[in-house]
Image 1 (cartoon, rainbow, N blue to C red):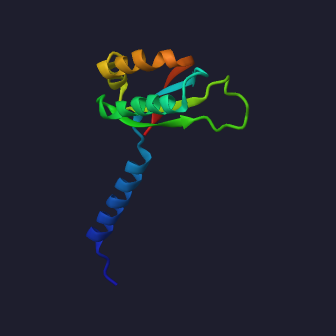
Image 2: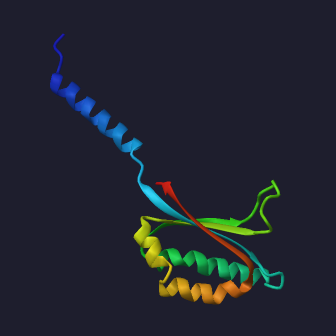
Length: 127
């Protein structure tokens, strides 16, 4: 039986490439925003505020993903925060550009008065 060393080498190289690509994770910056709407804010206005917030993904460069929603935890440690969202940025510069971005500032001016409490945390994660 004659072995095809070129084919074996190519297969090994391909396998190593797949393994190394799947193991290398890229750091991303995650921006967590949690808040509670004031009691007098109607569900329709809350829904619009959330849609406006999530629309930032299409308005601000460098946002990789945007997810979140209304709290569904059963543990009882929400500190009365009712909504939580995570914005994932490709890097620190993207997050730093997001903060003063006109679309973000306009959203803050429009929606922050609707809230009784607000929490913002950033951390490094992996993509």
